[in-house]
Image (tube, rainbow, N blue to C red; front, side):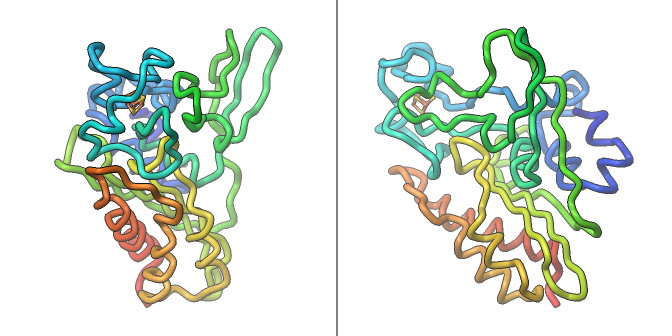
Length: 254
Ligand code: SF4
C-alpha cells in the first residue's frame, strides 16, 4: 500500500487512490499491507469481533446483534435484514469510483471481475463477502484509462484524525474540458455494506458547468435510498455534506 500510494504515476494520474491509501491504517501497517488484502479486509462491526454476540456474518443463522444494538457506525445503504455492517476499506471506495476491475487467478485459470461485482452485498448470506472462488487469489487491480485531464481526490470524515475508520468518505474524479464536466466518477465509503457508487450524483454533474450551486444540487442525491438505523440517522446528512465538500475541493467553485 505504501509503495502504491507513493508511486509517481499513481500520484500524478490518480491522486484519489494515493490519498485513500494514505488515509488508511498507520504507516507501519501500510508498509506491510497489500492492495488485495486491503480490499479483502473484514468489517469492523464490534459485534462481529465479539464472539459472545449474535452475528450472521461470523456464524450464519445466529442473528444480528447490531440491528437492535448500538449501530452508530453501521451502514445506511445496501443493508439487509441479516447484516448492516460497513465495508472498511478506503482504497476500495476509490476503486469503485474509478470503475476498476479485479484480476484473479485460480485452478480454472485467470478471469477478471468488475469491481462493482467483486465485493458482495450481504443479502441473506453476509458470510459471503467477495466473488472469489475456491483457490483463487488476486493478482492485480486495474484502473481503466479515463479521459484527461482528470482531477481527483478522497475525503475521509471520522471521529478522530488518524488510525480510525470512516464515518463517511467520498472519492471524486472529474474530467472538465472547455469549462464543462464531461465525466464524473463518484463513490462513498463508511455508509454502505460495500463501497457505494453514486450514479445519481454523477448524472447530475455531466454536461454542467462547475458551480457551488451544482455541487450542492448533485450532493443532495448522495443519500438516495438510504435506510438509517436507530443510532446513525446523522450519516445521511453527513454523507451529503461530505460529497458536496469533496466536489467543491476537486472541481473548484467558479
Ligand atoms: S451487522 Fe453484520 S457483522 Fe455486525 S453483528 Fe450484524 S451480522 Fe454481524
